Every structure is written in structure tokens, then in C-alpha cells.
Image 1 (cartoon, rainbow, N blue to C red):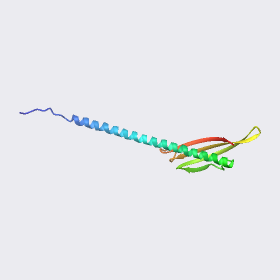
Image 2 (image 1 turned 45 degrees about the vertical axis):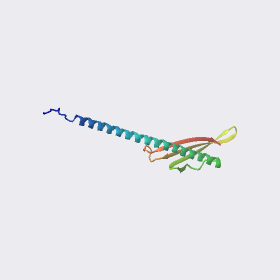
Image 3 (image 1 turned 30 degrees about the vertical axis):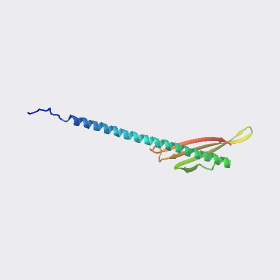
Image 4 (image 1 turned 135 degrees about the vertical axis):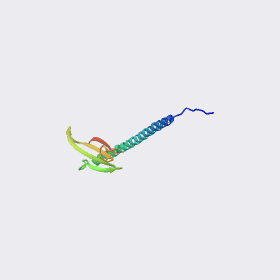
Length: 132
């Protein structure tokens, strides 16, 4: 007894290859998406650290004016926890009702991570005014 089976020509192999290619593309997308999330989270943490470093520079500038009743001679550059913090102070005198007062303006800029526009570059700027 001879049986005639229909011949199959590899349709399952084509479907399997298509499925493997689709799953590989999906895996690549998931890997890229995961890396983007990790980078975004790291940038958020660095941005928060830069804010607090800039705030520390601002508070240092205010404290130096309160203790000396004058702005520091030049811009001050400090290294706070890996951030370069530049603090500037400008004084402007004015007369109010016969009393001479001074308005101090402070700016503090904290930056880290190489060149502007780089992947790891973070910068925060804070400013404040004080009448003394």
C-alpha cells in the first residue's frame, strides 16, 4: 500500500523566520527604551544635585555679604560635589528717604558633565536680591 502525502515546501520555516525577526526588533526597541529611561532618570538626579549646588553657592554669597557688608572682590568659583559653582555679586547703592541703602544682586551657576550640549551636561542657575 502506497500512500501519497502532499508535499510541503517550507511554509512553516518562512513563518518562523518572520516571527524571529519581529521578536528581535521588539527586543531591540525594548532595550533602547530601557536605556532612554535610565538616562532620563540619571539626568533628573544630576539636575537636582546641580540645583542644590547652585543654592549652596548663592547662600555662601549672601553669607559673605552679611559678614563683610560688601560683595566679594570678584566672582568666586567653587567645586561642590563635582559641580563647578560660579557665584557673582553686584552692589548698587540708592537713597531712600535720606537713608543710603545698598541692593545686592547674586547669581550662582552650577554646572557639570563636560561641554554644553553633551549627553551628561547639567547646569542650573539661581539668582537672588538682598537689601542691606
